[in-house]
Amino acid sequence: MSANHPDTPATSPRGAEPHREDARGATGSGTASSGGGASGPAPNRFVKAGIAALLAVAFAWAYWPTLVILVQAWENQPDYSHGFLVAPFAAILLWVRRATFPGWGKGFAWGGLVLVVLSIVFRAAGALFYVDAVDGWSMLVWLAGVLWLLGGWRVMRWALPAVAFLIFMVPLPYSAEYMLSWRLQRTVTQMSGWVLQSFGQPALVEGNTILIGSETLDVSDACSGLRIFMGVIAIAFAYVIVIRKAWWERAILILSVIPVALVANMTRIVVTALLNQWVSGEAAHQFTHDVAGYLMIPYAALLFFLVLWYLGRLAPDVEQWDVGAVVRREGV
Image 1 (cartoon, rainbow, N blue to C red):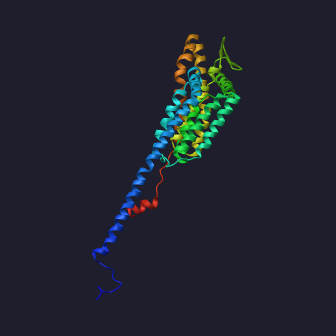
Image 2: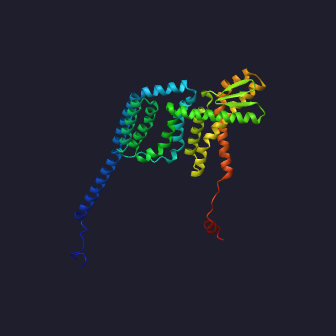
């Protein structure tokens, strides 16, 4: 009786056939969707790779004269000889932070074109006012814009510290370099005179010259400590990027760059003066132009890490425990 009930669905093979067709239709549509999802990103990746290659060629063509000028500065100016190491170290910074890489975006982030256009404006301004440093800095803006365009905002933010680190490969503008070098030169001369006097030496400071006994020690521009300063600030910048510290610890590390550079350069001048007094002028000359050139950056790095050690003792990392979780786990 229930088989003849009008509300009971038919169970014949003919009645079951539409259900099999629906299943095939659902399966077919799911396969088509899955295939479209798998094949969709592939052209996108190829397009991005092609555009990235074209942008790399355009960058090399547009910035080749700038790169040549930078390499010449690294070769001929001792204060910027570290420029050859900046780009490899920036790559190391990216590698160290690889665990936090957010992944490439699926499409193009057109906001990156704003930075690309801004880099062109910087180049034009640098050429208009004959400031090579602005031309070099525009490369960093261009690179950040391209990363934003191809990878998205999150990729650009992730790579921004390494991109910013590239600024150390660009020599400072002449006016800024002169002012900084002059300040460092005058300060380190005064400090060296005080230290020599504390050692009982008859040292008298006049401008950038130290009169010690019958000898005259000129603190020239090459001895201003600009090279040490640039090297130490690069080390501090890299450390702040890699190591997670409180904001005040990072601020202290950055501020410690100036005294560290001054103490390192003062040590060179004082040792040179003492060698000149106690050994010979030839020994002092050899130390200044041969030995000190290789030792000052490692020595300044050692002083910087002593600051790090002191900060670690001053504010040690304290492990925090959730007392409630421990009590629950132990069943107390």
